[in-house]
Length: 119
Picture 1: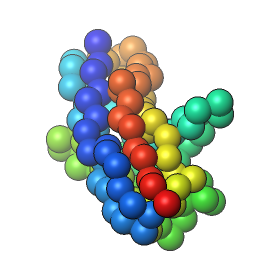
Picture 2 (picture 1 turned 120 degrees about the vertical axis):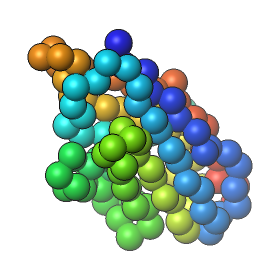
Picture 3 (picture 1 turned 180 degrees about the vertical axis):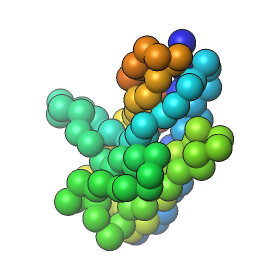
């Protein structure tokens, strides 16, 4: 079983910054990719950013140039540096990881961390 633990959410004024962290633990053989999703009230969960084990990154258009994803492969940890935050970035942010436990694939989610941006 793979567990993801997120931290770093909170309340910040528009224009401010936050850094989210997510650590994966368990009998992990390999993580192929880790990412961050978010879900605002009444909205569907959407991809914010992802990073592969080769360092390839992907960003939603709405966060390009403001958010940066990074990863410590040896620690199975992913970070999301969020700058120039906007009220529309307010959501619950979820960490996701996919990979292998032994030869069995997994796709796991964290419990979510609230990010609130005040105007």
